Image (cartoon, rainbow over all chains, first blue to last red; front, side, top):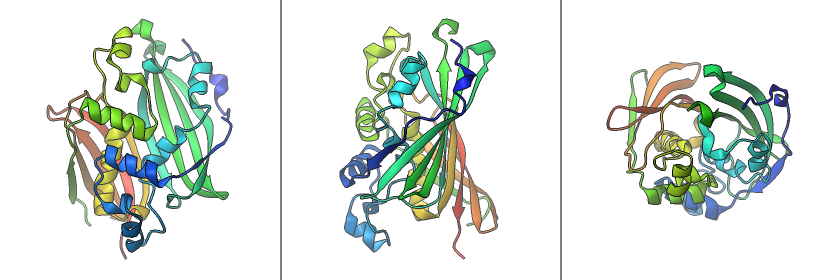
Length: 150
Length: 127
């Protein structure tokens, strides 16, 4: 299934997420993080943070709260069981913390195919801001496998 | 911090429980990571780990060594699937130190030698 290259440059509606301590603690547990800086606000403050820091990859997870995230692939006719994560990049501008309200804005940067269309790649960039100031830029590549070409 | 310095993190065995927990904590509920029936229905023999779980272990490798706010950039390519019940090892190697930044090459490997992630990070160094 050829993904229409005309989606390059298209933007998903912005969404905002309140970063909660409880979710950060759950993520610490799920990733084997035992450093109390990531679970105990007092330990975080002792280390110079104003609250629990958002760990390096958790911005990606917060973007999962995007109500349009599933719709993007569904609208393209992509079954999420046929996708793989090809790559992920983070560029950090400011540290995010529990208590922050972060805004995520995503644009499609590129669409291309390999192996005669058996693999299609969608590259999207997500700009994360707090009160209009840049926090991070995420660039993710999704690989769509054509089940018929397997 | 000089070229050749190496960081290692032995990740825990990634069980089905690990994947269920990570699915909940990360918000990534793709059934390929948690639902064997959904996998088999599309010809995938078993569930496999979220790539971002391995990247989170690499994040721990970095934050165990550096205050997080010094990480300027962090990126990976996912080169192979991580089967359930794998035990990955994360490695970071400083490749160069230049203009106040340490550059690291990152890899995640399985005990059989399969490289599942390759990547890099740039970290501000103490002056």
